[in-house]
Image: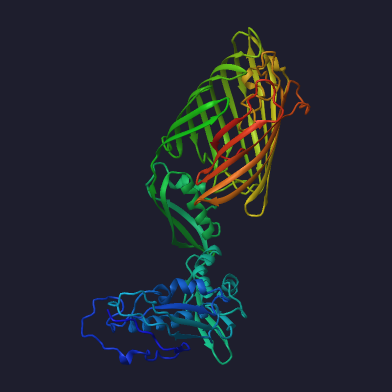
Length: 640
């Protein structure tokens, strides 16, 4: 191997227009007569050169990281190279610096590249430690003055489809103004986004010529001239979709569109429809292409939307699990066919196996039922529950019509109204010797939510307010009675910096019109558990009988506050939580606020793509007899 060459100090390039001079040291090198086997740098003298790179003048402009990512010199620094390769890299980086300077409006700058000598390495056959060569390639950027736009001209080409002057429309949509710096990157970005902005303004078929930019080095400014044929203003026309998904025809897709035929065309409306189709879960891929339609009498042109799609798998098996002290292990599984009753008619069979609960249920869900984001839901099944306060076996059916929120479109207002009919055999464990009684219940539950939080699954800012009302009619032992079950819940979220969120919750409820003792035990209010008052087991908050069995009540109060801190560690998205919960259940219809049970604890959060996994540990601050010292909760999602 030929010993490395140490280059003498001196300027190699002096400005962007200067030719690459002969590299020093080349005149003393013997050029070997061998055929090159390299594909990138061609024939080169077999002279070993090593170098490091020093860059100055780009950090202040915010360009050094970009230079290092693109620079040939930087990429191969420290490698053994030859003079021809080094020369080519210097030439490439001279042009790169000039390009980067132009990208931020500096058109009068230059790049000076010089080489400082280092130490000569010893021949390889000498057995001793030697210093490696330390040639230093210095890249110095001298940006020069910033050039600005002196004039921007937008004109229509000859033969434009209409008589509309494009200047007022394009000038408003083009994010470049007279006096702005002639930044190449910004100009390119503006040009790339102009077709989308024109489509949003109602001109989906505009023809945009490349801009003509003239740089005047004498006055250090520039002019931009551009020709734009706007075409005719577009209005939405027909929607056509392929037969990739059964039942998803043009009529049903029209329900998802937030526009009607004849409305002004916008690219945002088209994209909204595409996202709505993806949200149905019926499609693996969706593309919507606008097509030119007929010209109407008023001079506008219809824009037909042609939808091509790929169907997603329609069947899903889901499994989930959890654990909490008092309730023990819980496992849930389901099988779903999302389009068993086209279009968007889903069937789900669901089963729950837990220490204190068993459920077998079927569900029919019709999404976008007659209107976008409105769903019809019908359920039926059997459940068996063995809780501390009661034992119940229930057979029931229910139906509900609701306006739903989802991850793509979190709505300010959502609502639900429905009906529920059930027959249940229950035993009140809080009453000694209480035999099983059969209750027939007809309920008409309704709810409304005002949601101003910033995220459906993991909110960090804003609030939510929810009101629930359920008139219930009950037949027991050939006698009937009626009551109203009312609840109100408020949650609020306040960030402090980027990592800390303070969250609070208030929940109040009341049963009006019937005494606790006659109401079916599972329809009463109870508190305690992972979604209620942590630090206590499920149904562990509230009045108890002489045997320490919860009795339930006619009113409920729950309060909670927690601090959520989120951070990155070990390559994972993690969080820790500190919380204090409080709650009370009273036998009267109005909360008394005199026997609050308080719990406190800490928790961990493991943030995933489907929401946070929650692990909490809590202790009761003022426990009653029989309450455990520590309670654990494992589930998916924040506590509130």
